[in-house]
Image 1 (cartoon, rainbow, N blue to C red):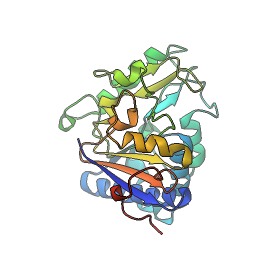
Image 2: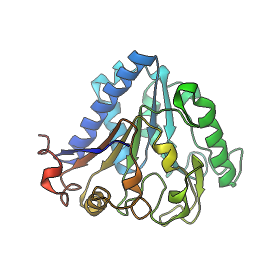
Image 3: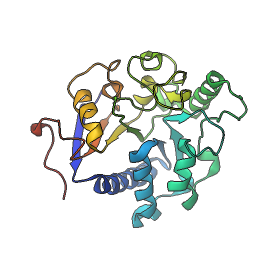
Length: 260
């Protein structure tokens, strides 16, 4: 478990640009070291803001997009192409504008896919795909992702792991179906905390006043059942990327002054 590092930026636009720059550097370094890189994407306004900033970054061409594996931390269990799906939003924000290898874009099954409306079967299939991608060096049923991105919800949820629901209590499976989620749509697919913790680095994104209470709660030692974001950490690094509004309820000694 890595202790969290907190970086605060002036506003959400600067946060997105800085996070995109960090991600480009991390991908390029991983590709130089091992020949390829793997990133787990997140949806929501901050996740999509980061992807849009990455699409506009001049340095994006430093990435070898054909040697990048992209996974998802969670997905709304809706028909393929539905505008609310994280994959649809990621395509619009970034993926349609860069030369990714379609075979290395690992999409969670939609509700009109090969498993029909059986979300549990779709979750099991994604777990199998993750396990197949894991190598002997990963020491587990998922790859050692270079960076796993997570947006933090106002209720402290990450991926589709909501406070007190069964999915956040899962200790063995790597992917689960979530039924009865407190925000629409009610049916989702999600990585579990054991899968999230397999990542080398976990980056949590939060911007806006509506995230201030959740950020403070997760970073104050709350339990992961009540505050799932508190249970999300990487093996070598856990990075909280915030804007000043989201950091407004944190003790000032917890982080350096905001970036310009």
